[in-house]
Length: 260
Image (cartoon, rainbow, N blue to C red; front, side):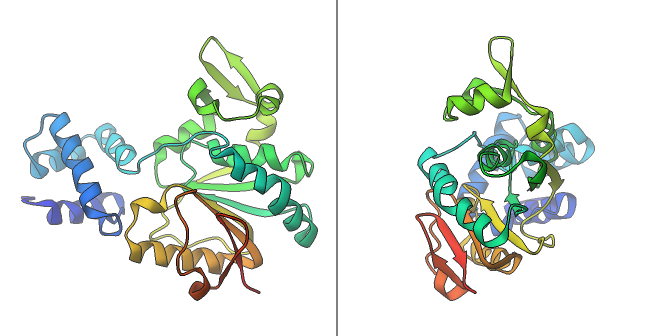
């Protein structure tokens, strides 16, 4: 019998490989308690039995747990910095075949944004972006490439016109040319091996949910995954306080370089 949150965390890890100890406890516990109450269960034990026996409920739980909030071209000023400063420098140093990883990619808005911006610099045939997320449901949505108007609200019109087809009044489908640039894979930042030789890693608006210890470990793993002078692009609330200790230099705002 699962009596409390500590035991529920063990259950979640055993059944999903998601380590809730790495998330800020008060915030995550409140989310889970709200979900249990909303689904009219009386506690952790009855809810854990329900999601273990119902794969659909388990998928919904993981989707809720992983806090998927995403949109194209989020924080436009930072994407302009990427387009005008970071990408030209990386292409100049490493050539057109950049190795790029969109970590915790959610529904695909971010890696597809990367592909569209990069397509202004290099041919589409040279663009390959690895995009990973822990949640099977959002990866399926990302592969479908169909989005509502809200997801595209910050995207410049030039990209909408060039790479999207309108479907009815409220939905847009991204072009196959851009979809072919992105490879989606399941990946857990807390336990899986990281790719190596990356020139650019983009991980935005997910670290805020992790504990300081988990953040530190992930930033160190990103550092190891980058080539010297490679760049890490983080969210606009995610400054790395101890970046020098890990081995980054501060480039532009929210862009960090791996020291040679």
